[in-house]
Length: 361
Image (cartoon, rainbow, N blue to C red):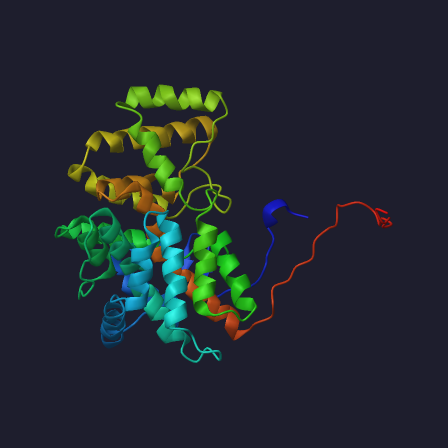
């Protein structure tokens, strides 16, 4: 038996390949991140092919229309008050499912998928402004998902380079095979549960510290140091005390995470918008970890720095992960439903032998 199912093939999928680089339905992640938009990639994952211009415009229009939340969802978000933003997203999706339920025969699954994909940014943004700033914001918008998130969250028009970086980050995190949250969503789908429940399952799983949140810890680490020299001394001390350095190593990639080089390039392009010294510190830590531990960085390391340069709240890094990965989750739900058998593995029993019951009296 493999601990954590490491190396176990738990099913087949035509959505993502992680063995030889990283591809979404055959397209290399490096190419998609540099040339495509998140909407194009979401269409690729959900529909199975890249859209033509007419299909892309229709897809974008539907997502934009679904940014407006039902009044019942807004009331729910207003009532939630302060809480972890991952719980807010989860509650928002559940509320949406209560008010806009998927049909029992799943005949409207594609429409519900677009509604969830379009609504998730709005759920966080509406809650954020209502509880952090005491105001309701307009959710009507005709820009890209990346632009919408940046503009509504920060309250100012983003630069083109920022929108492009945000787009790329959404693409990089959109899909990654049978990750814990994706597999959990597929298990939920295998029971014939509704789409909103499958997505809520994914959010709950991603909230766990061993799955989401590594980019938050990575940027926190970088910010602790004021110079490259201080960083190298600090990392050496941490390694000597057997401390885990977040943002390094990956179960699937022993040589390099294909997404990491893209994240590094994005951070380099954005460093002029913040403290360039942080990029130098990150680069030094990356090289030191490779030299001393033979551990390559993963997307979370420079990904955290990219979000920092975009001036996004650290507590929202994992919710942003959700807004991206939901495209992958739903693609897997569709795939599971298309050829379904309930996922129900066996376990090795390690408890006591058969016992005889003795009444108390």
